[in-house]
Image (cartoon, rainbow, N blue to C red; front, side):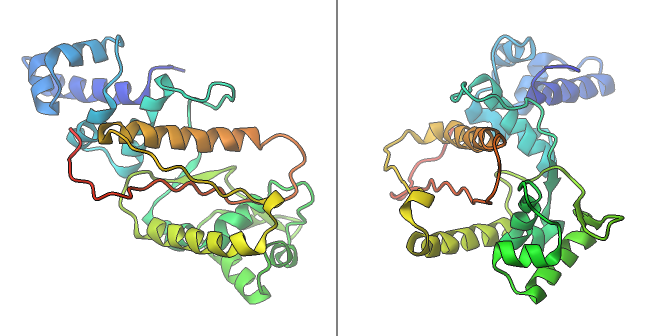
Amino acid sequence: MSTQAYYLTKIKEDFSLKQRNNPHYSLRAYARDVGIHPATLSQIIKGKRPLPLKDSNAVAAKLNLGPKEKTLFIESLTRTKSALDLIKINNIDDRLMLNESYYQIIAEWEHYALLELFNLEDFKRTKEEVAHRLDLTINRTEVVINNLLVCGLLEIGKDGKLCKVHSDIRTTEDITSQALRESHKETLQMGKEKLEQVAIELRDFSSSTLALDLSKLPEAKLIIREFRQKMAALLEDGERTEVYQLAIQFYPLTKTNEKMH
């Protein structure tokens, strides 16, 4: 299997298709069309330098990538800019990517939490166990289970118990999504409640106030995403007995008055 970065694969494929349709189509013409200096693009295609993070969204748009492809395109840039080297994660992210058609699954926290129960050592895979572990009513539990069955994320096994269909799922990144907005609202509200309800030794709330160069925001977001993946990799080991929610908040306190170039 090729280890070439996903973003580089997509750029080469796009350039190749344009040359196929027009044999006289040059690298200089392609650089003009995607908005990158010809010398820079030449170095990128040769694998001698990465695509600048500040150009990633613009180039992805020029390539007319779909939501999933755009997410993978931008994320692949972080593989050469790793900030957390002690924990290893797979270079290829093969999690099932959910889109807006999975609206309720994304927007309502119980669905993700139920799927994560399957990673607990003592989960009995019954609706009664789900209701007990997530503190839900039986009626709400049945609704959540039915939603997951209809979407093909759960199935009923031969033993009559719940079975998880996909090992892991994910959503798109930096793609406008009403479902994700609703999910984030629920996460923020639950965070306020857990701050009062959960003992300090069983939770961690922290924040940092930072001055920054706005052009570094794409790289900062990639580092946050890599951290989330490495946190998940770290916590895969050991005897898993509880399901936790990791929420990282990173937003401006000042009114931004410049565009990223």
